[in-house]
Length: 536
Ligand code: F6P
Image (cartoon, rainbow, N blue to C red; front, side):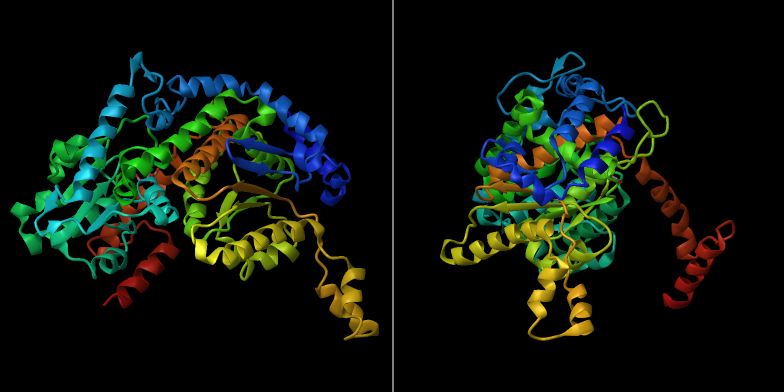
């Protein structure tokens, strides 16, 4: 793969101001892709015809369609863990067989989905009861992929939320579980212990705390009706005291950060109901079909990925900002942070050799207009370029407040326009001519210059429905897949999280005072000693 060639092509194209690309009347149409009712516009970037052709050549060279086929075909493409990658099967209700090791996994997937639906109906209509009667509050205990997906989606789909209230506990910080439990009644709470491995220390510690909280109120003997487990490890769930009839399992071919579509989405299903959850799955499935069928240039995940490679590997922009404009999407940047950074934040290729090019970028973001009043300053005038990924719905859910949504849309579009256009020194000078003169005029004007020519993309959707959210999440999953495959890494393992976990296990007795800090570096020993002096 000729990454140098990409770098040269991208730097050359970037010499032309983005706005000048629009002298071509077809620019906007030709540098945009539609998939279903989504529109992805990447015309406000420096990508030109030549650069795009090169990226498409590289896409062919990397044989991405073959790799995609291998993924959907259930081959063990997660080579370091020797696992298939088939979360797409979870959103394939009733459709074609999905094979792993010669076996169709769909009967199992549909069976679990059916069990989840029966359980969820029972919780929602009150026929499944806890000791205090009908479930009023659901507490999902999980972290990473066992938290971010359902927490993000439950918030995004708040207008569809007609089930019991849902709460999410993730951090091992006692403050998190404490503050969530404080206003709740244990007698009417349903606790979901969500952990693929059922070994994650944060989740198991919080689960123990919540089990005690329930037990103290309803008695240990009766607390069983309050618990459900979502896990691949039925034996560990059973050792925790949750029987098989209350375990919703999934296979090792569902990675944690790709798991919201299956049992890990149980809290979301309880919130919005099985029908809306199915619509969420259908949105994801529609994107899967598009990803497999559309030619590269009309393929939204492919073009989103190629735009990402253009900015990061081509132009060296180290970060990308995810800027959903709707407040209900406020957890999406965190969700995509795990999806992208845990997937493509690797330093070696599949064969173990050093990567020939940078790994995936730093992904960060916040809902739009809040960001405008905080970090957009740097995006507009700072010395580093941050490619922005805007997202906006044409309509909101608050019909009576449609004027506010129009303002939201105007702000989103204005930002991408401002980033591209900028403001020249002569424009700034003219603007201030009534207030200043001479040297002071120029000095003041310089502060009001915007370099412009800052790239952004916009993903537009009709409104934030379960179907649309499903489309968006699957779009980003496949973008990560294409970027990872083109860089040559395994996007489906996460060895980089292990070292810190192991050291935390070693340090716990040191922090507790049961072991000394001998053997630790002086900085760590100093911090431990500070904690001992101040912990009380
Ligand atoms: O430590 C990282 C990680 O393994 C993530 O990949 C995963 O989503 C999260 O921890 C939670 O894991 P589990 O569902 O097994 O508790």
